[in-house]
Image (cartoon, rainbow, N blue to C red):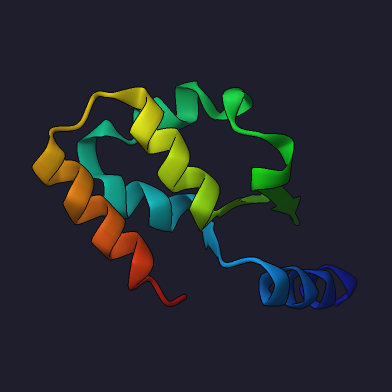
Length: 86
């Protein structure tokens, strides 16, 4: 219960996405996030009850730095992240 309250407080400050939803949005290139997740700033990740949540703004910046997506793929991913509702 305490973790749930902590998550509610944390999500009111930042818009978060869990790791499985992020993988669904990114698709086949989601392993880039998994392999490079330690390069994400610590403030961009929150782990509660064994589930990793990512700050969407940090994910956008991180995906931009990867340079493995075409501009069309990048635009599609950004649109999906902006419209994401858990």
